[in-house]
Amino acid sequence: MLFSSLATLFALVAIGSGAPVQESRRLSVRQANGPVVKGRYIVKLKSSVNAAVHIDSLPFAFSVADSNSPITQSYSSDFFSGKSFWYAGDFSKTDLDAILASPDVDFVEEDAIFYALDQQKNAPWSLQSISSQTPVGGSDTNRMDYTYSYTEPAGAGVDIYIIDTGVYAEHEEFGGRASIGFAANNLPKQDGAGHGTHCAGSAAGKTFGVAKNSNIIGVKVLADNGSGSTSDIVAGLQYVVQNAKSTGRPSVGSMSLGGGTSQALDDAVRTTIAAGIQMIVAAGNSGVDASAQSPARVPEAITVGAVDIGNVKAGFSNFGSLVDIFAPGVNITSAWIGAPDAKNKISGTSMATPHVAGLAAYLLSKEPTLTPAALTSKLLGLGTQNVITGLPSGTVNLLAYNGEGGASAPVAIPSQTTTPTDKNSCPAWWQDCFWKDWFKKSL
Image 1 (cartoon, one colour):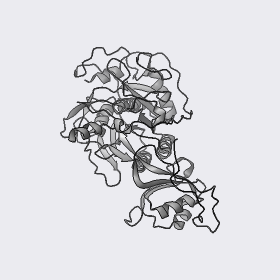
Image 2 (tube, helix red, strand yellow):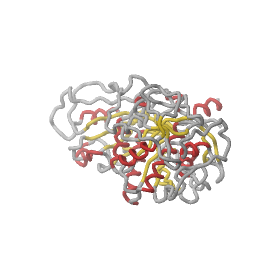
Image 3 (cartoon, one colour):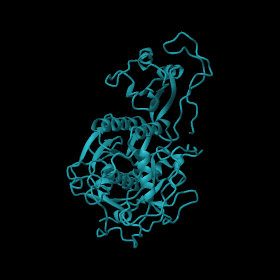
Image 4 (cartoon, helix red, strand yellow):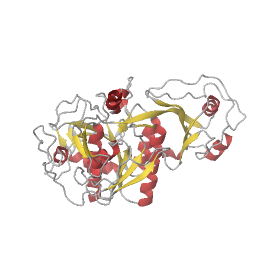
């Protein structure tokens, strides 16, 4: 990951200790390679550290509820792998210096901002693509007379967590199966953007969705302008893990968002998968290698690129060895906000991702005990090979398929343990955000 030093290097006294800190020990802030929440940082403690002792040694009150405290989020040590304790806050320079000097701290990173990944434009073809190994053909994406082949239970008994701008739960597409589970700090629970509702419709809507009987749980971590902080997204993932454990239901997560690179976000996604919840994430819309973006670069997740109705890779879709599969993502019609029957047509890897999340739920409803690794193997093993054009070398040629139109040829499953290679380049943040079109029109 590309980071640079934010703090100057000089010795301070360790928090909670009279021992001097060596200059070589003092940490520097890991700097994000994109927009950040100014003055806010995410702190990870070493797994061996007693969190209560560390908290008592801090030079400020540690309370999310206390308006005088700089703490904005704290994460249970049971959430992250390795039982380490994490927290985030709006820290002054003095407080940040004290944290950086503490021998308890593993790393500190800026709280990066992430964006909903679509390209706003104005029986969808996408579902026929998912359920057939024969190309859809033609170019008319307005038609609603395509055929979607599927079998019961079609996602019944499985929860799909839409980690996004929220979900318009009252939309008729959801038939009472949608609920609002979580909204990050100071965010209204309702979806004021439409992005999350559109994704939910593609995953599990009665007309537009792959898993027509799955439950939809909205996890609002992005504001209505389409952006959200790493700390809020991580808090949303913590909710997903805790709620799934409470319900005991098989679950998958859909993340149609991305930005720069964040170790905290990557680790949170890995932790969620380790808890038994497979995560399906967008490859990104910058037309670059997906290794430059979180959470797309997490190898344990299922990273999804986008194709059009002709099975041509979308020009905006990221690519590379970390992309696991492609799905329909151009001119996708799905549910929208504003009215119970509202719909909209938009494009992006954001739109491809919930199709695969729905497919994961569809398969999980047939075999509820599948582990994330086994579910990934089954889903990728069903994919249709070598039908996508426009792919650069080194990118898998695999199109999502539910297996209901005949068996596909076997495909080699990419390693789930490969460590991604960071790129010395930043993704095109402004181009990634579909709100750029709205912003330009509003000027």
